[in-house]
Image (cartoon, rainbow, N blue to C red; front, side):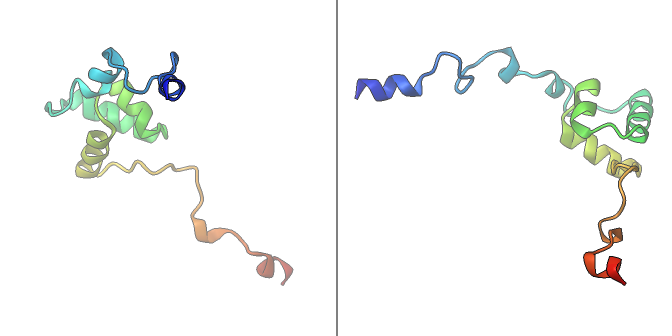
Length: 97
């Protein structure tokens, strides 16, 4: 039974560890704080540059959910502009015609 318990506690495993990374990550420090005009401009520029929401959260130090909700309230689209719609691809049947 002792062998099983030691298998669960691996020395390099991050599971169950407490520290600055888990307790208060950078992107959660500014949650529930009001947005400034400068931050909204930064959000617009990052969205225009097709930046992923996770990267935006690290740059702006806010949670990804707050970035998504603020973008929706401001009318900023976070959808990537370089992707084609799903229904535009030709199927094998259409290519043969």
